[in-house]
Image 1 (cartoon, helix red, strand yellow):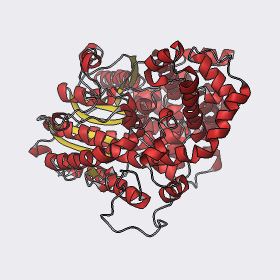
Image 2 (cartoon, rainbow, N blue to C red):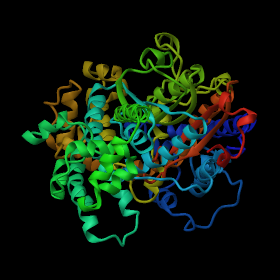
Image 3 (spheres, one colour):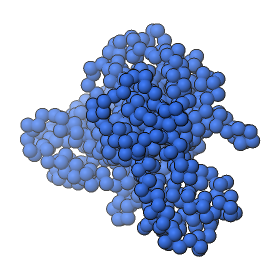
Image 4 (cartoon, rainbow, N blue to C red):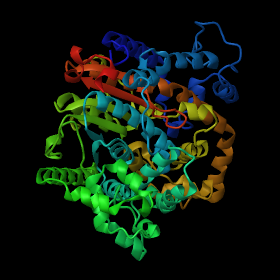
Length: 614
């Protein structure tokens, strides 16, 4: 059997039921908006402990937890306020994805797909990407290629491709034909430029890596040439990492029309260093006589080692049939070279669940649909497109930005009627039948990075504190005015990213009030500063409450992801589906992938040993 044991639909439904029953009680904490923290006296409404106690208990590492209370001890007191932080922490951990027993281990999946085969990797993505992005691209590429090889798929469609990091790596490292689709023309343009630069240096690096893996005892004179090429290559990495930027020098402008570097068209500087006197026509004849490996050998031989006459005689002795065969092979090789130079095609398009892929990809074949950190509804639409389009055989989707999901049962009345489905959440018939509501604030809480906060990378508490105190000022000074009425109608009372542009609390308040269209002329600086002095001693309350929300984040995220997995398992044409943790959550908090394979590629006849297939 190719894949690890399938998690059944009934098990997934039972875990969803457990999570919804748990969140029915605890969701009240996640749905508190930080903006209203002081105006609604949230701390005294929900917590019966000092904030210092909550912070110390929640941030202590595994194994450092103070003596645990007995199992079954209630988290809440008689007035439904939090009274036991240790019990709260334990119960949230029990209801997180790693402890629900529904995820497929990445190591098990890769072992089943690849066995003990050695995978050739010429270029680590960290060469041209940040450490976070390279971590994501390398691991997700490994999974994508595993499924693509098994299902005999050469075409990949990357939804929400952004700057094309994943797409370009899949095309160049693994030779997959990738269409990167993004709604932003700026992203698409940047992806094109970055990919153009990357192609120019790809094979130079590929060949250098191959030589480094060979016998290190080679003579020094054989090592000088590739190192010279690598000096040229290293200078390009800065350009590639800033894909959308244009060079200003005459040399760099002329390079925009150069073709990508290939095995036989390396920089002319290298040829001049040889002083071989070998003509371009001779190099061209070698292309027709030998494959890429032989070319590589000849490139490092001195001219004395090549018998010109013998090569010439060999070509003259060929009959017409053999000449024609070699000519055809040469044309095919050049055609393949051109095709490989354009394996990645960035496209600009806003994708929805009703998008017809055949309208944008004329030569669409059996394909794999992927998405790395697709925002909001795009992750849900990716799964719906996969289910409804016959040409899509595999899907691998990593979502993010849960707060941007459209939620079917969040709105009511006229607001709901003006919005058209399908909704981003819930997706499965099972969860939809319960008419379960999460709420935007809770979905935003699902985006909080538990592991990062636990290991010292805290939340931006100061900016959240400023915003909460601003709301107090608004309520006390503008509540009866027209400006406040306008603010109440503004979605989420959003003042934007003013904190980073402000020099002080007073400056922050004045800029925020101005942006909201209010008159702050009657408020003196000392009055505004007085609010800061009054609430600063209570800032720990805000920090501690946000940690309570952080502890709940894996539970809410788990419900959203299990709903997506359940959706795939409800489909008759999906043979196998799984939820897999791909990334280290410290490096990439949105680390789970939803993977599905159609029945056409998982029939009984195809469930054989992977090694027998290749």
